Length: 279
Image (cartoon, rainbow, N blue to C red; front, top):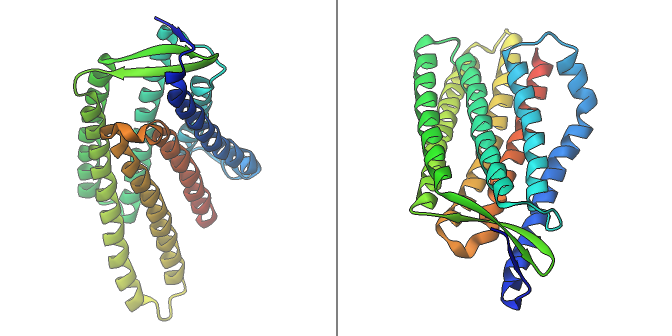
């Protein structure tokens, strides 16, 4: 039920909602700006080339993220009215989009690690099992948590604010999802560093008289650097997820998901474009 009030006691919530909308518009603007500035390069390196699995995954993540950003903007603008039913639909759509995008990023990372481990079937099976186990668990936890989250529209002094009420231990479930996702990211980072160090040691012994060795070394350097940037961004956003356990960090709690996806989309684009130069 929509709540209408002009009580001054709501002003702190109005200020928080306004600040939240500024952050979301800024983060969405970064995503859209990155898309506009790299569109010509994307057409040249992606759309005009033969499609592969990585191409499809890259485009899926990129354009799903753009829709995600637009959805966040519309759901948080204080001048846009939303009914309780619409608020719940938007919340579920954004949460499931976030989950699907994270899975696609996991598939991309699995493919990269499979290539870095020179097509090892044991490594591929291991990564697939871990990725599926974590994403199935996250999907189940997301489905459970959404059952106990209710959206409500507040019209406070002329501003439209969409709030969500968490029942039971939903915040703990959300934090658990992030813990599981962080476990995957830490594992992927460890495997990347491990195989890179091993390859660098081998290439150092074979580099003399073999110019191709430097090319392979440069390729692994790009992979490690881009993965380190990816993991660093993920770690920063994961720290913001502590806001789910701390009501005093309300703004960070709302902003963290969009910031994460913004960073992921831009970083995955950088990685893909760099890889195209080595093909």
